[in-house]
Image 1 (cartoon, rainbow, N blue to C red):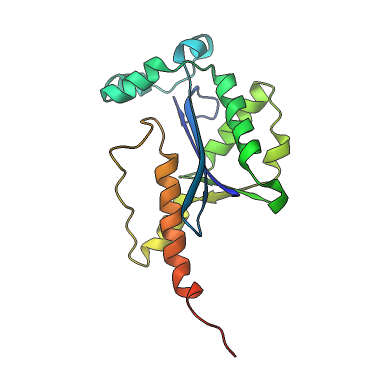
Image 2 (cartoon, helix red, strand yellow):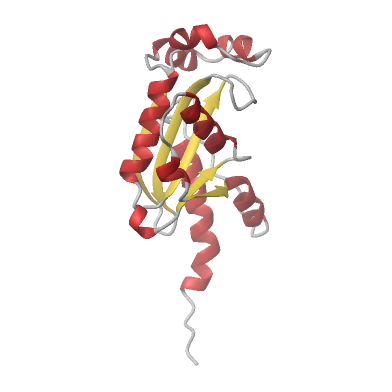
Length: 191
């Protein structure tokens, strides 16, 4: 599998904002198979000396539901450890022999850029994998699929993590991919 969804929740919009959680899931859009998943919540206490956040983020987190607050409170990883584990997970689970890696992001490319910037900041070698990464945008795929009448399925209440949505977003890519390619896969091209 050389497609992975990367979802990084940070305490702000700037790339150097403190990371709150990283989730990564590998998947195959043509079959809909969801592969290995990794999730690394970051302890705010471990980052408190260098905490960088946007105004209003902390009050919003305090107003979040109890599951989200509990996940934030119970996080134990330092940001550097979470970034290292996420990069290691991507390296371990990618099939680099197949060529480029498709890193799916929702919205802009800030997730992969933030991971790269944090890797550099924490002196973690990211070059081995970053040179193979091709950014793919879920939002663009949803716009294209909208022309066919596609509407995203609702997020499950039983989602495994409250801070990130990588699995849900990977499922969306699979749904759209199969919807857009199924008509062509069934056609025969006899001359």
